[in-house]
Image (cartoon, rainbow, N blue to C red; front, side, top):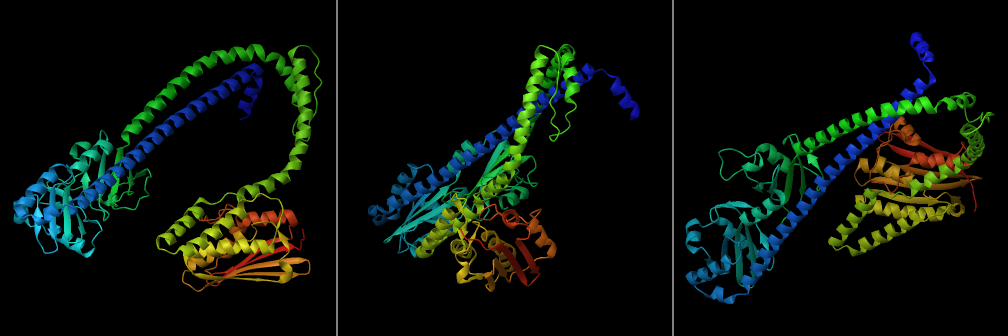
Length: 579
């Protein structure tokens, strides 16, 4: 090591700068090329994902159009009283003519409540006597004026997978047995093609419509009707997030995405061979390598001449500048000479003066920065909390509980207004507890009445001021780390506020699952604490604790005490303050 250091000292300054500049510029170019390559690859991946999402949306529209067309046709059939008054042969001829006008209909039936069934293929119907048709007629009788759909099944009437749909009004029943050939052609046009295939499964998870062998889809051999292999079937029946780019070990070499946003509730899968993307990545990285080598060759010559001919005067100034070691020792330089170096030294001295002023400004604004960061965290409303709350309200509306939905909306509106309000002023404990009750009301609506919440506050404490959103993270911690993991309906959450002399004591107590002392310390310091996605904001107990200590002093803040299986007590201690 000493030998290497000695050799480095003997190397001229220009040579050292040559290698440093060459290395720096080469690294910058390489980094920019890598960044550009990653950007291109990411853009290609996003393009693939957007294309798959658009294709799935279009496929869902085809399914909805398919269902709506059948529904409209059935309603139209039930308006034809003449068909139900004809005998079977004549009605069959009329039904067959109507069937031929719509290429998605395989067999058309008209039945009445007396049991008479007329079919567009009367002879074939009498020979096969499909039980599904009678079952759908019975379902239509039991629930008239409602379209009834069967699960996809293999039908001898259509020699393929079919869906049977029925509709009853008054004494008339219309039934359609529709094959999947029409739907297959549409799906193949949207989701099929080179290096990709598709599969459509019923709500129960049974694949009934999929690409053919030439697309690369894994199918069982020697079976009719065709069936997908077990690995693909298990993937289709798996739990996946809709409209997400996924992959499965059961189908190596493919990424996929699925959607179920259609009237029929069918699961539509689109599979993409990622070897195409891998090939694109290899080409991009090869281009990066070639470009970097070309730039390196050019820089090797350019940097050499720049270093040799332009750095000689600067080295003289650099020796004077070396006296500056840190920000506490900002020393001005006195450099004699003329030309650019003199102006450079003067600019350097002006820079030193400016840095001194900036250092003082930075120190003064550090405290303001910490307060600003807290407000930024305060205003970051958790997307999972907002999404799940709105989903619960929508569920209440669907179940007809408009009063509960109205109450929840009012609570959410007040809570959001309170949270988003930009103000440096503290709030009274009365205001804070009112909004806290709105937050608890929302959580009880979402998780059911699994706990009771009570507030005990002395009258003198109501007009005491505290920083806004100080209590909500404490109650949120009790709910998510104590009461919800416990389950049941016997949870208790208590907020107690007492004024003792000039000190305000606030206690948040729960009888939840409790936690270990190590976990209590982790939550208080905020390092590696358990993450809860469903939070109101990004403000945690550690943020509140740091803020209180910064505002009131290190002797104030939050303490936690917990016993596993018994519950947790959080104590907040701050001085009395009046605005």
